[in-house]
Length: 470
Image 1 (cartoon, helix red, strand yellow):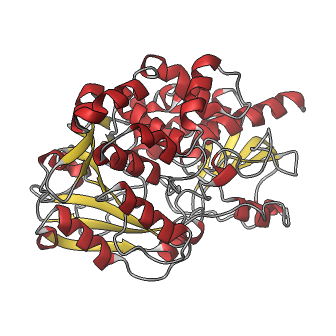
Image 2: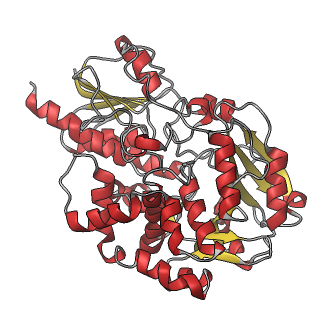
């Protein structure tokens, strides 16, 4: 009998398995796909030699993750590569706001009327960032806050909607860039705690950047898997779990799955029926004949580039996808260009490019033309650089990763109370109706992203049970 069996080899499942194995528990991990990775994979989706990340590509939360930073992942091949700029937000007139490692450079890009306001917003938190991020990402009660005063100050700034927070800015560059940061989790700009989402992304960039993983996001998953094997953990791929009886006997079972899948597998009936899924994504991976011809020079050296002409345009795109049930005419886009810093991702002189926009949950249309029209506004001649493209709407994303229900890459709506209280209102969100069954996916706090903290937090709940029971 194993001490723990983990189902799902995404970053959270891998992290949960590693944390348990590090503490001497016997662990076996089961994955339905033929490789580990979940939302952190790398594949040749377009042409030979072009290595794309089907989901996550840039990793501000990964490099800042307390869980990952406590593990010897560099020993197993993980290398973070930092682009010259973490992120740029170009505008149609050829100018750009930037999110730089430097607070001063970032503030200057917003213009003189907002530079001081931005510095006053972020600078109080940066000296205490490592403690703050640990406290923030360990909530709810998996650990007592190490710096409750700073966490409370952060809560006062971040718990209101982002639209309240951006009232301190007078001009559009700062408002637009910050709105784009919030939109990374597909959250409505007027939602509770959306200010905190934007702040976390900004502070992460200033603290340690927005890197890509050398060779692709798969290297994060491969490093976790290699470490797990060295700790004695077993990994089984091509193993689909349809019910608990499909798994070997264990003292605890940990699921890196959606709440919907867990309820079906474990027979929990309607236990998670009130859990809401959010809008979907429409993603395109490009093989390019050269770099993206951005008009704004800042965008040419940035790892991540946000596309949205104004905060109003971004807000309208989010409302269309999340509330109005239609694809936006001018979608907000998040794009990543890994090969500006990692030439191994494409043949010599060529590039890989990653882009997505938001669409309604389960949408079955084709957003390619709308996305490329947006790109042409900021990078005229982009279409001329395209050698091949691989498109994936909500049905394809869900087929690749069962956690992306209806194409929701956040594994659950990041809106309302579900921003903080997911998958249910509970002080122990990783526990389930069965005392030996736990959930550790992005449907649990602290939510979406390649950071492993949901798995880390769930592992704490598991090992407490294992120590209490024979």
